[in-house]
Amino acid sequence: MIGASRAEEGCLEYCYAEDVLEPGLIHVKEIWTSRETLRAHFATPRLGAWRSAWPRPRISDRKLELYEIGSPEPI
Image 1 (spheres, rainbow, N blue to C red):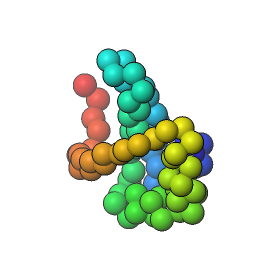
Image 2 (cartoon, one colour):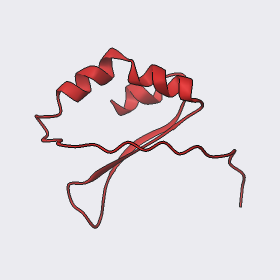
Image 3 (tube, rainbow, N blue to C red):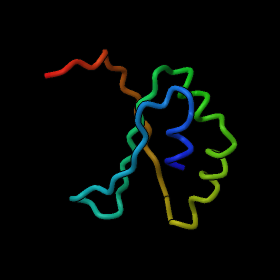
Image 4 (cartoon, helix red, strand yellow):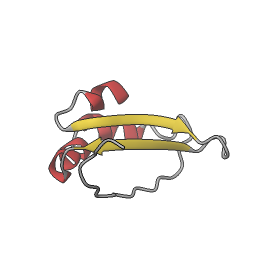
């Protein structure tokens, strides 16, 4: 999932990380160039197949939040 998503047009970052204070909680961080490229990602057959496989690794819930940010600049 990670490699294929990173190869999609408009994907700047796509990664998974387990929460250090809450074992079993997985955070997915995605950065896309636009809402359109994110919508295209959600529409891929691969994403539908991945969601149908959730019972196997016991994924039970998800919480999606969209944050719109400005352009990055060095600190």
